[in-house]
Length: 319
Ligand code: SF4
Image (cartoon, rainbow, N blue to C red):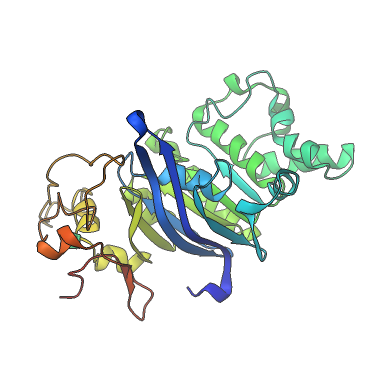
């Protein structure tokens, strides 16, 4: 996609935390991308690579160290709190754990209606009707509105969390591992629900997951993150058919293939994810990369794009 049809543009965002002994943890380090209206951008990477921090930083739930996020012509990271608060109805988040995302003392109706109450949307009757309708839309019956979260299964709770996120008709929702706490049997139902919502309402998602098969199911484009940086971004098919970055190739090689006749080489990554407190110089992946050369240790690779919009940050891409 080009920036002219972007709904939201992330520009050189950094998020550093204070570490021990005066060190900085570079959780997100100079990340840029854009998301189009009605698009799902999947964001994948190993646990600890900074994807959740990036999701929260993009929504200004944590203060960015540097960079900007442009939405409706304004940098939302620089908005005063009062203005940012009003924008929250358009920029929502779904967290991983449906068990801790809901207040146990609020009924489902109260939880789902809360964004309308907070943003002062509609009359009391309209808020009730809208809450009832949205719960029906995500598959709950009217009599269940007065129940408490503990009376629901994990899949039902995540449906309630999704209902709460979309009731204010957002343009953009960051979904942080929204199905990873659910049984495999209900994952597809929740993913299908999210896709239906997108088709009907045109909402865009930043879909964060460590699971490449889940991301494949739902994403239009996919970004791969390693140690605080995006190392590859491309349309879904291109990423799965022609992964350009050695890290993406390794991640894809670990996905099980249901067809036992197909044999695929499993690429085992050397060592652990390095510390974001002291990331390797040059290409951050060079300590684990099977194609690393001297240049990789000396110089950080810039993201390069081909004409299809496939971007890879690797010195040796297309060699
Ligand atoms: Fe590997 Fe070098 Fe490419 Fe980094 S720049 S991924 S070390 S080949």
